[in-house]
Amino acid sequence: MFDPLAFRSALGSFATGVTIVTARDASGAPVGLTANSFNSVSLDPPMVLWSLSLRSGSLPVFRDAETWAVHVLAADQQGMSDRFARPGQNKFEGLSPADGPEGAPLIEGCAARFGCRARFEYEGGDHAIFLGEVIDFDRREAEPLIYHGGQYGRIMRAPTGADLEREGLAEEVGEKLSLTERGQQLLEALERVAKR
Image 1 (cartoon, rainbow, N blue to C red):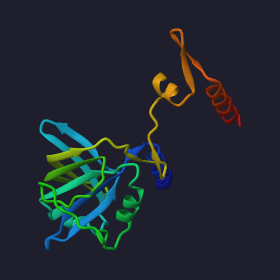
Image 2 (cartoon, helix red, strand yellow):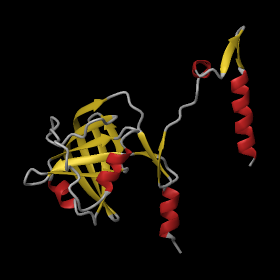
Image 3 (tube, rainbow, N blue to C red):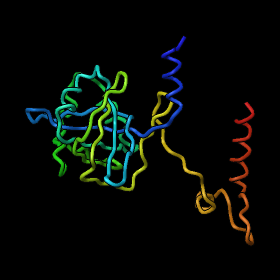
C-alpha cells in the first residue's frame, strides 16, 4: 500500500528555496502565496515553472493572469513566507506593492525576482503546473531562505582557509594551515557532539 504521509516525508528530504508568487486578479487587487515548487526550465528562451494545488482558492487568479512574478526569499524573510502561506487573509495588508515591469506586485527585500509572462499551464495530479517566460529579473547578494524536512533553514557553505583564519580558528604556519587553540577546542567539542 502506498503511504501518502511517508511519501510527503520523503519529498521533504529535498531541500528547496522558498518563494512568494504574486499576480493581480481581474479587479487589479494583489494576490500572493508562498510556494517551494519553483524550478528553472530553460535559458533560451528564459523560462521557469512552479505549481499550485488544484484546491487552492488562488488558483483561478493564476489561471487567468497574463503575468506573474516569483520572488526568491532571503534568509531574513521567514515572517513574510509565513504570512503568505496562510490562506484566506489579506496578505498585502500594510504593504504598498508597486508592480514590476511585467505587471505583478513586487515583494521587497528578496534574494531574486523573476517577472514572467504566463505561457503554459499543465495539470499534474493534484496540482496545476505554471510555466512562464521570464521577461524581467532582479538579483541581490543575499543568503536565501531554505526549507527542508518541514522546517526553515539557512545554507552553510564549506568554509575556506581564509574563513577559518578570519574567525581565528586557524592560522598559516609556513605554507600550511594549522588550527589555533580556539580552533582545536571547537573541533574537540564537535567530535564530542558527534559521538553522542
